[in-house]
Image (tube, rainbow, N blue to C red; front, side, top):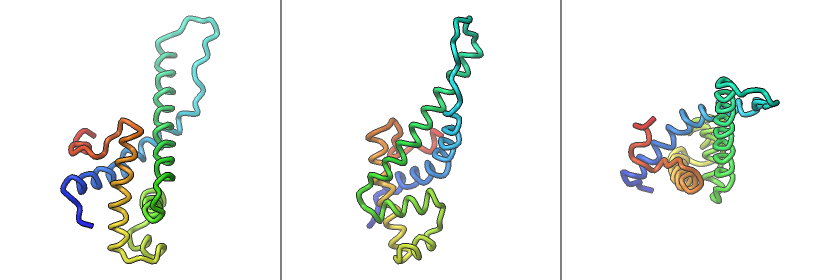
Length: 140
C-alpha cells in the first residue's frame, strides 16, 4: 500500500495525536469525577465559576476519550483494530505486534497505516478533531 503525501501526513498526525494529545486528554479526563459546585442560595463567587468551568472542561475530555475508544471498537477490520490497540494502548513495538499477530513487521506497519487513516476519518466525522489537516501538528 503506497501512501500519498497527504495520507503520510495524516498518519504522522494520528501518531502525534496518540502520543501527545490523547495521553493529555486521558490525564485531564480523570478530573471529570470532581464534584461540581453546589449552589445553596449563597452568592456565587468567581472562584466557584472557575472551578465549575474546570469540571466542565474535564468532562469534555472524558467525552473525547470515551469517543475515541468507541471509534476504535467500531473499526470493522479486526486486524486494524488490533494493531491500534496493541500499538497505542498497550504501547507494543512493531516487532512485538508482529509476533502476537503472526505477521511480518512490514505487514503490521501497513496495517497500522491503514488503521490510522480509518481512525482519522472516523474521528473527523464525530468530533471537531480533524487529523487529516496538513497543519494539525503545527497548531499544537
